[in-house]
Image (cartoon, rainbow, N blue to C red):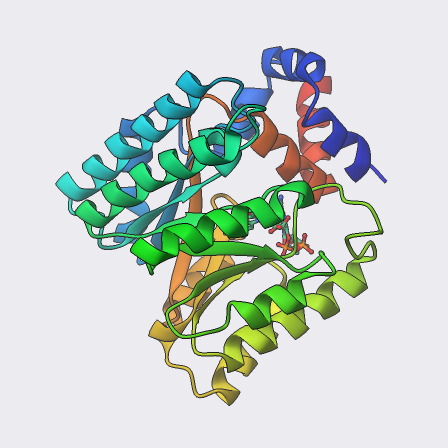
Length: 308
Ligand code: FAD
């Protein structure tokens, strides 16, 4: 019931100004975000790698409003990748990129600007010896994102993409992208989407997730199982077993700060476990989507407000 207004608030500049000023916001944000700076992001990465996790770092930012800002985001990723190389963390840490943060939503030449900036990031990742995964945003960007991924994969065949199980189109996209060499992160989907393009009921989304996962696990690519859902994690393990997949031919992924005990349990079984680790000052949209996913997070936030 609260999901719709929270996801609408995630896109509202007025609510953003209000939420950013609320005193308890910082404490809760810290649960999901590594910090504002590159140094903080590298320190948290180092700690998590030491605890057996792989990492995908996200420099926070979305809906960039001009080309200079988009280029600055690409530069921030270049610095991050250089730091991962220098600290020896690149072997276990990659980056995730939202194309809207590197220009995709700009009215003029948005796609070309995003492609050029994403190419810069891929080049820096190649030098560092790691990989890049393109996040997926709302459904109006899916074709554009998959098109840009296709172009980049010609030069960077290790580039990963995200597919969202809630979209009706995704079963077909999984079949297209289940071939050798492809890296696909399968998630449920975090945006407010109309019934014309996306399943609405949780049970339907979960069933679609399993169908998509079956296709990816039966394929020759590298499936990345991005979910905290205990049932889906169990099914993923069974599907991998049926396909006789070894631990280094697929991976589990979870968001930083969510179900850390389950992350550890999977590490202890010998599974590959990657943590999506956001950092930077532009945390608002990311934070609101996490609140929308789980009423308990919102309740915690409101309780902290009320007790001040
Ligand atoms: P749910 O049914 O939402 O949750 C299952 C259980 O997990 C819950 O009962 C709870 O115990 C726990 N849980 C889930 N969410 C939270 C939370 N916020 N706080 C605390 N506990 C929680 N979405 C996109 O649209 N595009 C992307 O590019 C994208 N990238 C992602 C990358 C990774 C690594 C992950 C893990 C998710 C990503 N998502 C992305 C978000 C995803 O689409 C879902 O919105 C999110 O993962 C919640 O779905 P779930 O599969 O965990 O299942």
